[in-house]
Image 1 (cartoon, rainbow, N blue to C red):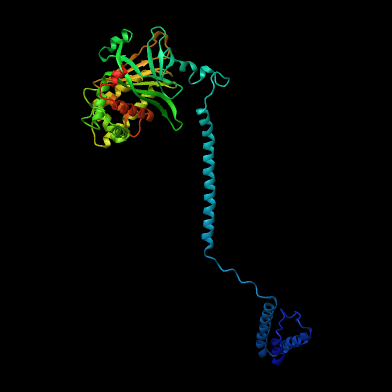
Image 2: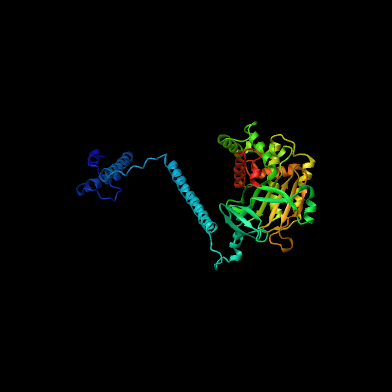
Length: 435
């Protein structure tokens, strides 16, 4: 075979796809046909070289196509950061929807709380069509009367005056319209003739003076349960003054302003306040005190009792963690059972009824109850019973006076203010001013 035609074809880069393909230049068609015919007529020894020539022609055609039409675009290089980027995008997407769910939950809570707060804090006129006068929390009559006596403002004092006898009782504002007033002084039966007092119409000759009061509230909505006031027997005020002053200055008879603020800070401190009140309540002779409670809504004795029991249980557990074994005896357990039994048989305590807990010189706890507007028992205190173990009354009193969690923070601060007011005067002068 003559190699010149093949060389001529290679130099011109002619390579049909197959034997029946037409070359791109018509003038070379005859040369390509002659080359194919020569290949067919060539001896077998030259056929191998002819096949190689055809393969070269095909490769040359492919190269011609690439040069003429352009090479295909190269594949995009693999980016190893793509997976990390996708993960970040997915994390941002999830965080976005989580934030949306939080905002939706907060919005739903706010939408529920705002109407409650508006209703709770808005004064609704009495006697309208929405809230009848008899169903309102506090009527005008409750503000105008105290224990059936008309309420008058005389100078700077608010008093309830008996129309028949002319006896006056000074009142203190409680800060809530449900139970608007508390008496500044009350009279309770003597410890030694409590049984005879009930039979003789409650012969009352022990006068107690209000030390401080506040409202007991529960839950985050601050639902009012009762108003509580701490009273101290008027004859024992000098003893209380002396013991409070000795906590700051052992030899003083009164405290100067800087010392009064020091006493206030100590009584409000959870640890120091607990130590001061615990020492005062343990001291002999004991100070006679009373806790007066008036429910602001209908409740029952079991509910009140459970609140005191939970407070005492928490304090006994705290004492056990400090290594104290005072409350681990069988005697204290029996006293706790007696305390629960004291209120277990009682029923409801309606709004406006009066419950009085007393603590005598020996620490004995006494319980008294007065129904609201009961004609057959108007103005009388009914004795419920007593618990002689002084640890019970001390734990109940500490629940109002000191510690990290007290039953009424407002009552504790009011009691502290009353104590600071007492120590600002010389010992023995406060009870004279009261009487």
